Length: 331
Image (tube, rainbow, N blue to C red; front, side):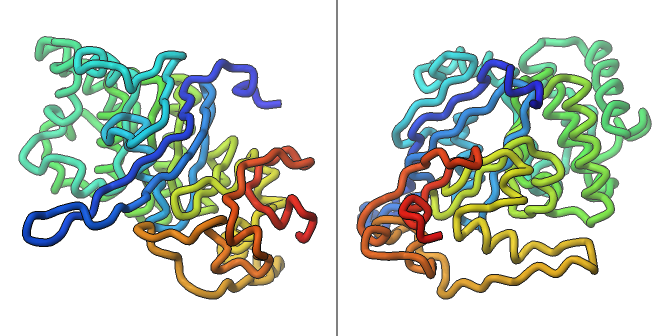
């Protein structure tokens, strides 16, 4: 049993909902609502890596930004170290920022092109710690060395680095304040495959060294399998399956999870994986289908799936799955 399962819960998101208004017309009235995250509950224990996977537009990044309060949820509760952070005022949130950080998806746009690496990595130390310049220089140098960069890189600008080096700068910035939780928002999706492996190994080494807790958001199932202790599968704003990494990849339950895994390339030429094809496109989050969100594309759907929203239920395998067909024994 992994040690993290014995650890206390660091973050607990309960029934989180995030809707975005769509405005139009002469007076810019609200004409529709994008249901980006719809009743999602997830908990993350100290030292754990929770992978969050799904297609583009399913609400993964919005959920990650919401638990950091970069976006205010429409409803729900978010507890960090046992306290409801949605009740925090600006001063309390300022203090909380030291414990919760994010690594952004795009290393090209997440760094200020007009600032040097010293300023980018050292600015959190100035804002939150009030460090003087000599102290900041020492701390920034330590952080750069931790992520595999050198002292001479401190005076350079982002455009002078490769994509992998830029992402390492983003990692150093996220670690500057010794956070407990880091949201990794597709941190390797914009990088070459060889560089992806370097950044992933770096993140794993840093987790072991500093006891970090990760929410690892990605659409790359192979990457998530390599880094995650547990994996949550998201479809159109809802969690459809939650399991430990080995269980989910060996015995996926939900039809959507099976389709995702069948589409993931396998680096073994002797292993043949039967490709599963599903019909149709992902429905619009502005007007999601009633009942199970996946029923419009699911070959096992029946009248109950089209009318009743399935809830995450424990399964004999140890997974949690939201599927009426599995509950009824049709799969």
